[in-house]
Amino acid sequence: MSFWKKLEAVDVRIIYLILWIAIGIPLLTPLYLPLSISPDTVLYYKAIEALPAGSVVVLGMDVSPAGYGGELGPQARATTYHLFTKPVKVIFLSFWETGAPLIQDVWKNQFVAGELKNKKYGEDYVNLHWIPGSETGMAAFAEDIWKTVAADYKGTKLADLPMMAKIKSINDITMLIVIETGTPGGPEYLRQWQARNRNLKMLIGSLGVSVPGNIPYVASGQYISLLRGGRGATEYQRILNIVTPTDVQSADAMTMSHVVVLVFLLVGNIGYLALKGQKGGKK
Amino acid sequence: MAADLATMIGIYVYALFALGAYSFTYKDNSFFRFAEHTYVALSISYNAAVSYGYIRFTAVQPILTGKDMTFIIPLLIGALFIFFFSKKYFWLYRFPISIVTGTGMGLAMSGTISAQFLDQVIATVRMPLYVVDKILGFQAMDTLNNWLILIMVLGTLAYFFFSIPPETALGAATSKLGLIGRWTMMIAFGSAFGNTVMTRMNLFIGVYKNLLRDYTSFLGLAALILIVATLEGQRAKKAEQKA
Image 1 (cartoon, rainbow over the protein chains, first blue to last red):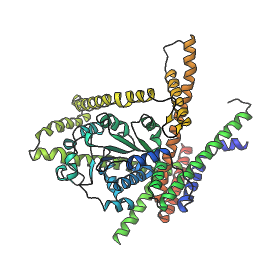
Image 2: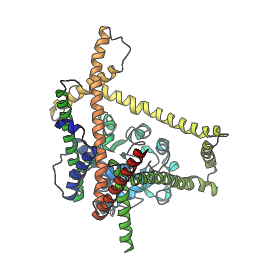
Image 3: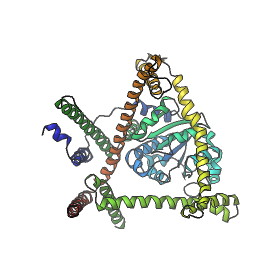
Image 4: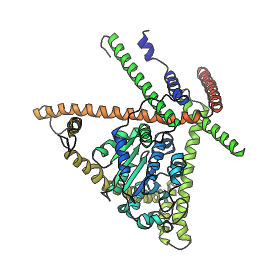
């Protein structure tokens, strides 16, 4: 049996083991591998930087715990930190019941918590928690926030939250930032929110898997920009200068995983072509 | 002390479920099935509890306090979902289903045409084929990119255009343009697959990082799961041979 034939029949568990080892190395010792910043991440950063004082920003934490644990958690934390450094009003909410409790988890982050001390709940930011109904809920919220949401995450009525006094519908919101796992997510917000308020600026924090689906909306100008998965999160953290050693380890592990997958792809394709050559060009 | 114990239990439970789920890559085993079933049960019970809390606060309380009695109507319609389990009164279940489906479809369709169809068409039509920046001048890469978008959009449209017979000259030209469309779609699918792999890797890195916080639980439980999975595999093989 030739080398390539043996390689073709390799036990898949060996590939998994190689991945465990390759990803494990940077998680034990940071390698400080280089990472370039993509234009999308710079645009995302600039869009938040350009927000005028007093703007109302909605941060939709439409995430599942799995998405949050991998790529979207760092995106949400960096975005929240950036928003808290600006003189803007922030409404946190989620159309995913699993995303709502994670809003408070974002606030626990060391950088976010540091900025949170300078903000006052009810005046600078509110947490409207989970809004049910998926796309129908989004439509209802866009039409009349006060009729859709009875109270915030602590049960405080909207009337007792000074910030909400002038925020009645989607027309009072300047920017929407969606950290999204899937449906409902960006396209549903486009249909129900941006279709009602054409001036609504939109940014997307996307899972890597959703990036190709979101790109057309960036190209058409419906989204200003997007963060591309875990890599986008790391780039954004570097722009904001809020990188911890653990973040460096995660970024290194991400790079290592990509390198390993690329090597597998190359070897697999070379093997395929070599075997094809041995068979005299026959499949 | 109690907090330390709670943290330790938390780490072990996390490690048990994470390794149990990933152990499927080695072999199907009891730990994997336990993790899988617990996950499904937890998700459903969590959703039920959160929904119950929301309905109680938003709809039931205003009814009980007499503030808004109109909530009785949606609550009654929602209650009809229970007839899914009745053969005799199944027809009643169709009322809430038709309301949910009709409302959802109506809302989605109204927004889709403007936000996901017209806006995309307008953006493509308005795309400049010769990009000049006011400060930087001619932008070669952006120009190339826009030309690529134009060719690929036309190619993909041509691929799905079946109205002209391929025997005619126009039909043959459309088929050739459709080839570009096929390549475009293959590149798009490849890109989507690559991004999927990246996402799965990042999910794995998140879990792996947490597992490495405590080596004892990680290595100990990993060894235990591997042993159990191997023994179960051997037992299943023997049972298969006997049968």
